[in-house]
Amino acid sequence: MVSHEMPARFIELKRQIIAAATEERLMASWTDLLQEMAKRTSEIVQHGPDHIPQVNFNDLDNLTPEQLDVIRQKGCVVIRGVVDSVEAVQWKADLDEFIKNNPHAPGSPEGDKQFFDLYWTPSQVKARAHPNVLKVNAWLNNNLYRCKSGKTIEGVDLSVPLTYADRFRIRHPGRQWDIHPPHIDGPTIERWEDGNLRRYYGDVLSGNWRQHDPYELEHRVDAQGSLYGRREQVCSHFSFGSILFTTVRLLGDCIKNLPRMVGLERDCADTGDLKSIPGRSDLKCLYHTPSVLPSYGPTGPPCHPRSK
Image 1 (tube, rainbow, N blue to C red):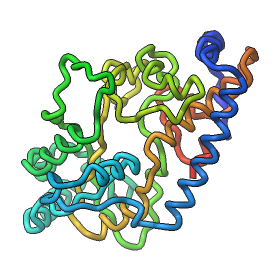
Image 2 (image 1 turned 60 degrees about the horizontal axis):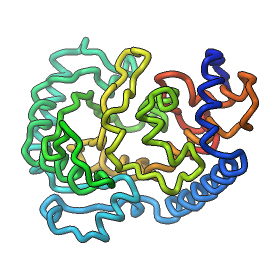
Image 3 (image 1 turned 90 degrees about the vertical axis):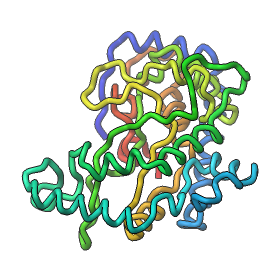
């Protein structure tokens, strides 16, 4: 594991944050969090793909509060039937044709391209603008996110989803996919530096991680998620990361690999980065895990041994 030495100014910043909790409370919270992660991990292993809730697009408006709570707790959901299969298959065929006609299009791995650095092909534009895709995004925002204080946040309209243009992937059979290892998107040290992010994660940083609500909007929408100007770093808040699958095989791969514990993985990174003893000012207590490398999210067990 590689350690990254942080600037000395983070020593004082860390002191300020840890001052909100006692050493005993922070360490007890860390221990409790690890125990909960172990419990949830066992549940995922036991249930396999069934751990992820699956619903039909036509049933979205009829889900019960209990079903919504399950989706909120799991942090992910498979929604079937969003796009007609004939239309989706045609998008895939058009992408294949586009790649065939543009062999020099950037992508990886070299020599067997499957992940393409293309953002605005006709199929991608059609998919993002499809009315059912837009409805799903708005439904997720309106049914899962909230502001517990009841206040209206100026400039926030959960019924109008914004489009995030991303790349696409076409998997080839017979190859182990290792281009994107398990990782957590989003800022790292920026969660400490930005005042709104510190307020958003206040329960975690004060040793009360169970009180943290990952769907709370207050403070989060005004937070600065990119302070270092890294290329391709997103500076806005993602309510949900959506993946549209045009084939059942790819959807099956996703179901097997997507199970997550919403909030826990981020809480673990936050608390783990802070769990060294308050009062210690040596830089070693700042870089005990590479998850604090500015602008880069933790990448699986190598970066955070507690993530599985």
